[in-house]
Image (cartoon, helix red, strand yellow):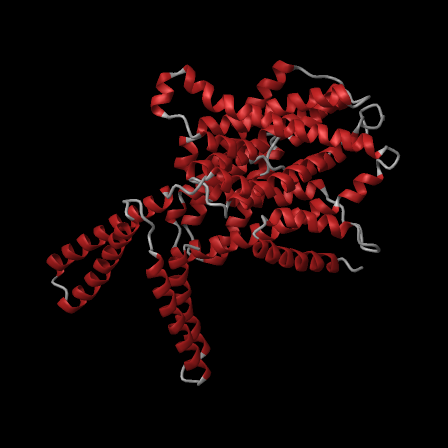
Length: 526
């Protein structure tokens, strides 16, 4: 098979499975993993192996960066305590408990190798969490906490993983040295990411060329990640810091650049996600070949044991971490009231693992410093795959059902803030128009037309609030959306008919169609 054919096959499979996932209301990462798993058993198909360096240095930076770029810094900062509890405390706790279980039950697995396994399976996946939660309509704070956790936890896990592998290979480990190194690696990654963001921002401010600016945006996560890894600090935190910083300052970019960059990153994230989840499923046959001499009963027992440990540790951590600090501190209870228990259940269950775990497992060295094989490497690969499959498929499929059973719904905070911001922006624009009318004595017909447009928007926003029955009403009511959408479709059909009858050319069609597309995107919130 030619090298291009597997890529084309995977693209076709990604498109087809995502269509089916939307049709069946299944989170698409789940169906992609299962599709890759089914494809891996097709006879005579070329074996496609996962290259850990490709994942960690090529796939991971452009997947982390847009997630950080579109993260709300305000929400991240407000929820920093629960985010760090999950991204640092829970990751280290999971690493420790999984290491103890693996060392206790898997014969011949040394402590260092067991800790490597724990670090590998400890971080929930940023891609999986975002892809599954994006369409489920959960409260804004849950999205902020889980999104923030998924941005930071890879850094904690990968640093712990490096220490465990180094201890296994060299036979030396110092807890004090590791703790100091952990702090330095994290702080260095954040500082370097902010520096990269500052440099890229200064470069972007000198340009007004969307293709070039989008290209620079594509290079940014690689610059942050690769430079950090070269300097032996956290590439994950460097990429995240650069993304959050540039996301906060993205308002300074020209409008054309912002529109094109957002569409570009959405497409990049979709394609990389698709490839990654299918690639996860494709790895099982190769992993099983290395364990062909092991009885299935033993492998199944180990897989269930480690997978259950990963899931249960998260559940056991979330509830004390949520409620205990508030019970101990009245000040915290006042500042940050106890969240509903249903929200805690949802966060405890949203612990899907993904490709970073599998890439880290594949990146384990084959031999130790003395030439002996890395102990339990085949077991670690197998158990990592089982944890990913269990959490991604089982938890990913049951998460929507759990949300419905718990009655957890979108709290409308984002819609409320958006409506208020739109209202204040339009009122400020009307004040500006009135001021200009007094200062420059502009033609009354021009003033009336512009004023009427803004006053109509203000009236629509107020009508949305009244129809919803609360001040946090959605920005556009269903009746308004349906009518406006129908009117846009009529406009579209009209200009197409004019083009088809050769009364306008294709360039005129594209200019008008772009305006209609932007209007429709604003209407639907896409």
